[in-house]
Length: 202
Ligand code: HEM
Image (cartoon, rainbow, N blue to C red):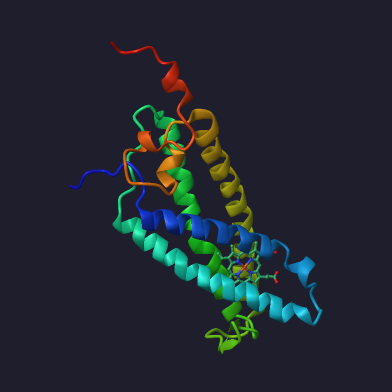
């Protein structure tokens, strides 16, 4: 058994921020599809295919992230972090990973049960499924419901991260922030207010 690190490693941090911001863009792109290119307009096919292509690139990054996460243990929680917060964080993180897998997979599977298939940045990937509107409808429904659940989880995740960074200032945020690899306590990007107020131990 190895020693638990005190912060995430560089690859985990790079993948977290790259995929995090890309996902925000892709979710927004998905919800805005009808505004950008309303159904039945000539622009629709090209815009949908761009959404599909970005989604496939994101899926590859998500696979890399998941593989890295499974092969590397996350850092230990700060000692002072209440048990319920650890449980809540672990639950939300797991749910975020499930959504990260479900989003591209449901979109990809749905598209393969439609005659349109996928055009990956101009290259046609012939659909491996039959043109079955009901099957397409089911997976598209999964895609849409997951998008709402995912959005809600992202809001909770970002709110909790900001609370740790700005209110608690307990070292949780800086574990996922780029910086030199030293104990999280020394890396606090927002100085520890509470620690300064603490009376001297001796
Ligand atoms: C992480 C990746 C992805 C995210 C976050 C995402 C997000 C979204 C969102 C938010 C919507 C709008 C849902 C709504 O109507 O309310 C949408 C629609 C759609 N997505 Fe994705 N998507 C992803 C990947 C993919 C992939 C890989 C494909 C296909 C290869 C795909 C195909 C589609 C299609 C066809 C629609 C439009 C459905 C319709 O016409 O109503 N998506 N996506």
